[in-house]
Length: 519
Ligand code: CLF
Ligand code: SF4
Image (cartoon, rainbow, N blue to C red; front, side, top):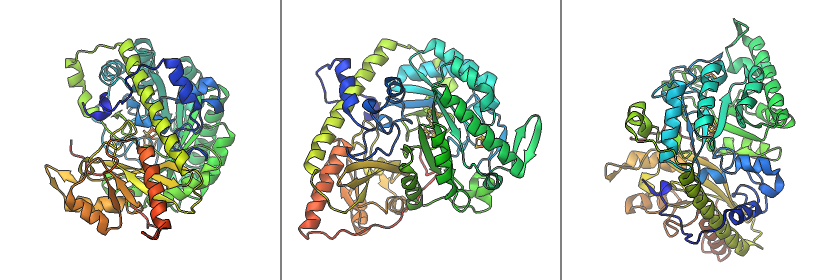
């Protein structure tokens, strides 16, 4: 067990009554990264006081719907839905659903019964796993019998686990009643366009009323069904997130319109994700050289849409069989073979006790952030910087530079620290030595950052980072991220004011997909 899954990092030893904990969380505005003053950019976008209590209950420990929750709570997917009813030009059927996963074959397809067993096994081993999602590898609603049988089995065996569904939306209006019946309270629809001319460039066909429909007609059917399904769900009080794949030159500008359309139909959250288009994935876009966005292009579009509604920026484009915190993948620990040998003990009381301690840590984190923020108050510098953070969870800087598979990116301004994204990287440390080729790709991935916060770093990468103009910072090892980032920014502003350093805007950075991660 590593730090992210143990109690090692929990500081609080006094047991705080749960009501008090919840009250403190309620006082925490936004989902923890807004820096106190601005609108939160992420997941829930607002705290308990800004939304009905039942909605707060739904988002507070959902790692996708609350950015702040994603540091602490895990999700799992079960791959029970192999078939799909449309074709997207960014998808190859041999791989996971690109809507909800980074490319990679699903290791195993499961029956509903195997899936239920797997959920209990994971829930026993990972007590902070709070959400079960069905997201492919095809479309869950093109496989309704398997999808809903799985939900039924899990809701009977593990009623504390939230049920989540991700769909392309074509079949959605036909299943809204069943979604309600099984208490699926979070639904994601991938909507990449509302204009059929644009849709025809993304979707070669849809399978509709027993026929394959192509071109603009296909896109027209798809957008009508998606928007109808969204309206039906929100009218029934089901929390909806919209995922959109940003495809430069095809739908990038248009996604601002999509954002408005889905907001007007009650969507709670919009997740604009970069296109994954490596040629080796064998997709139409990958093979015809369609590029994905750069880090700056993605952020600029997310920023443009942020005034309209809550934006999700912490999506990891997960595999359809992902297990663990967003950004980690523990699926290899829970193969069917291993689960059959596991002693599964689904202990609801133990899960609740663990989660109460997680809540205590969240409260401590917010209090530390707010205290630091108070000291920043009054700074009106027109300076914004990005910093990269190596973390393996709990909202702390608790990962070594060489072991980081991704860096979380925070924007620091005089309003505070705001989570604005993450970058996958190749591991620097491979088998005990540093890999220079990896270091180059890491620097490209965080090139827009002024500093990188780590728990530990060796001399060689330190020197290369400094040469690239990135400040390697290990003085906040194992501390809370936001508190540390604000403290660093205060010091940065002071050094700029004193003329000790000159503030310079950094350049663009690569969004790396499919980075090498040894298992
Ligand atoms: Fe899974 Fe999706 Fe539910 Fe989350 S993932 S079905 S809403 S539980 Fe989350 Fe993964 Fe992004 Fe999806 S990070 S790909 S948004
Ligand atoms: Fe692939 Fe998902 Fe599109 Fe179906 S909906 S083609 S599985 S990306």
